[in-house]
Amino acid sequence: MPAASPSMKRFSMSRLRINWPVLVLGTLACLAALALHARSLCCPYLYWDDFEILLQSYTWQETRAHLWVPVNEHCWPLTRLGTWALVSAADRPRAVPWAAMVQARVVLVAGLVLLYVFVRREFAHPFHGMVALTIFGVSAAYQQAVNWFAATPALPTLCMTLLALLAAQRWRQEGRLRHLALAAGWSALAPGWYGGGILTGPLACLYLLYPPRRGRIWHCLAPLLGSVAFLAVSLPLSGKEIWHADHYGSKNAAEAFEPLTGLINTGRSVVDNVLLGAVGISGFTCPPWVVIVCLIMLTVAGVWWWRRTSDHRLFVLGLALILLNYWLIYSARAGWPYDIQLRAWSRYNVFPQLGLALIVCSGLRPAPVAEPSPALSLGQIRLLAGLILILFVVNWPRGYFGTLECDPDQARVFARVDEIDARCRAYRISAADARRVLENIDMPGGGCDNPWRFLRGSANPIPHTEAETRELLQLP
Image (cartoon, rainbow, N blue to C red):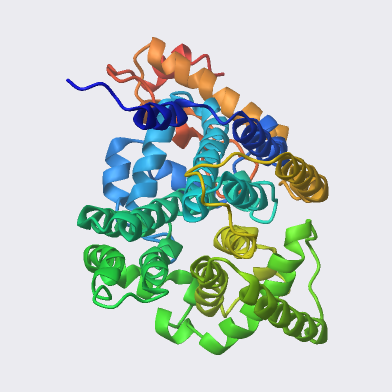
């Protein structure tokens, strides 16, 4: 076997060498992102829709029964399966809220790593990847997606979208059809977590189509097939319920969809949530004249940024992530008042914050191309450290005070359910038998009419009379 050449040895060593500045700064950015949402992790709390989603996947039988049952417009079989895995891993009712909060943070960090890899590959330099990671991660703009379990499906959808974009990126670089197949596959999975994931296929197509390549345009439509495949499977199973969702009242989905209202609210949200949200400002709705002035200024700034951008493809993708996401959501939610509800629903800001990060990175100076993976300069290290610090400081008030207030009574209720559940397992009492003798108690957080539904009971129960059950459970 011939000996490896010096160039091959240098290449393999460069692949093995750890880029310590990137690792340290990336870790700091991830820790800062987690610290912004630390309050809900220290005091985990379930709220309204959380209970329904958790209980509909609390057992395997419930999960199978509700697999294709939509929640509002969301047909999310993967969220159903993920929730079942979550509650199974938690094992005890008391651990469920904490497990839900941990899961959101694990997925958030995974999304930050995927974003870094995608942007670093695009520019062949870690600086751009670190800027994208920091702008998206060290932000409280989408805090509901981290702190509220019912809104967390937006985060795995983000990961599926980034995986689809990474596969599309590989196809642009290598031209292998398997990468197109992967892009289509991830695009098919994205809406299985959250309805907004239906945009993943069109977004990946846009990334491939711009700038267009002669003779390859049909290949670029492959990710769209993934979105179409999901609709082909899900609509026959859940389309009727989505079409006549309860919150539409007497209207159907088409009648409730108002594109003009969606367009107006998109412009307002670009100012209220993207522009102001980038510097940690929330709870403020700009007057219409301010919105118009800001949009004109943003357009001028966007044209200037476009002219200096080194990657128009990322600029277009980032703009689409902002505008298409808001327009689709606000058109479907036209019946809700923007000032009172829609502006405050920060869970809708996941894709727009990603779009903002990509637009900013697109206009940074192009990286040197002498090396495949150049190191960060001292100036770039200082700039990134300063960016992490500044974004953390301006976003911390929103991250802390914007978190739902935790009622300690909810933890006490879960502790009581845990106590009864332990006795059920010890004395082989089924959950159904236990519920027959237990008096209902209030569950703080709303949305749960009977906390005893969280009882699992014994896996191998034996028959008990009601008197025996009460005695074994030490009930008065």
